[in-house]
Length: 166
View: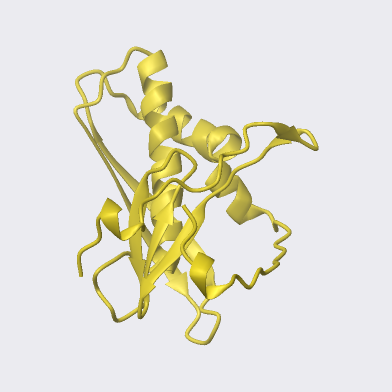
């Protein structure tokens, strides 16, 4: 399956809300169904990612996207923290493993991140401090996973002629 802008799948989602609401920031993403078990997720800055069901290997599984988001959130923090310490990295990889329930909804029970780093001036102390700051202070994905966010839903049934708004 190929997707391109002409398909209307990558058109700009609704405007991102960059205003404070109740002391926090608002975030907005859009998920569009392509076909079957295939979707395109679009973030607030119009970047996209393909997601798919468990056995339809063209995209990332949604549950594993959560693990990727956790890894990426922390990795961005670690890079920035080490840069502030004037430590240059030549390599960073975060491998994330998780224990997941065998029954629906297949909840993650344990998540483990292994950071693999290389750089001339790296020290265990600097790496440990960067990871700790990320996990305890800066990484919003990790903080959300450790808490219990309120999740609400609503729906809108659109007329067939407007099913792909731009």
